[in-house]
Image 1 (cartoon, rainbow, N blue to C red):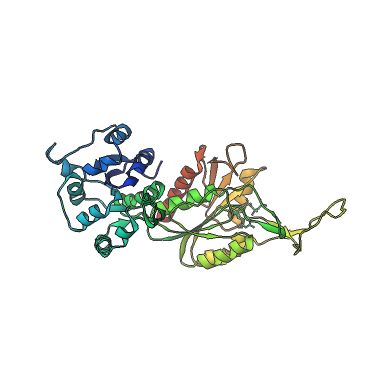
Image 2 (tube, protein in one colour; image 1 turned 120 degrees about the horizontal axis):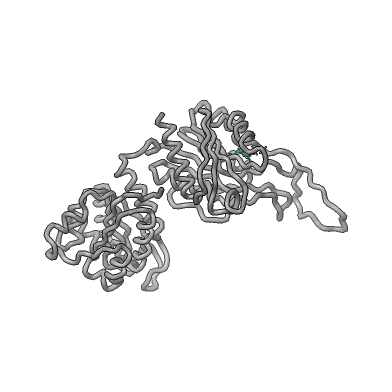
Length: 402
Ligand code: CTP
């Protein structure tokens, strides 16, 4: 179960130096289940070899419009996405002008799927009024423009012009292809709020209490919801991995900050997934100065309960009809406790986490058991947190459609 399963993609590689990154781009698309055809403009071969793409896709690349009758029409027929990466200033101009003077431009013109371009060029070319106009024309026609990023360019200048990172292009392609293939699922255009990561409770200016949460599980959920067309707001504590491309990210540190952010985000939301590992206790009187060792024999910290975010948001969730998924981290009487949390916290689904070397906190995989308010319980196998996130979002979609 992956973001590009059974999707047909036409990748057009044009003559920019970033073409060397397209080997990785193709590999990622294939790894996510896509069926990829590659077309190169003749001059792209100055930057990357045809054999690279033939080796990765296992297909011979068509070279010229005259080699095989109808290749120019077949390449883009019934595709879920056309991706032009890198897209040079010249190729964007040719697209804007509707040109069909080689295999690549003709295949793009004849394609019937949505089109994404990842421009890459020198900053002055990107900022030139001609390019600006061409990009505006393409956007107007519904083309998705991803990037360019700013930074150091191959020629040593600094500014916008770097091709967006391949992972970003893949994420944008997944979202675009999902919309094209499914006409937008039940989450399309809906707001989904996801919390992730640990929170911190301050002890003094240099110390805090926290837990081992990495953020991965919530990031997997947020990425999947965004891929499937939702407007995702990701409220995250300081995890150990980077948040995914797509969702709007609000970084918070404490449980109180997370609660404030939630209050701001929940209005108008369709679903909330509380994957954050929120600290339950905080020091009753955090010190304003650093606690010194002094000649102390021992140190006792007094803790008090912090806010329960699901309880504090219950009224807003119920009034707004927000479908809510909580997580339960249990070591004893797991199912009994999880079912109790489902009822007491007013949830529609609770995802029970086991704690072991391969599941729970700090891991890249998880084994979840889903308990739902319709009385059902389902055990899932060990999955990567990305796969578990995808599966959870699909389950939320099914429930929203019931
Ligand atoms: N949660 C919350 N606010 C807290 C603690 C947890 O909203 N202060 C949420 C978590 O994000 C999760 C769910 O409540 O979705 C269950 O979290 P968990 O830590 O398993 O349970 P607790 O409510 O903390 O209960 P206990 O410590 O008794 O297991």
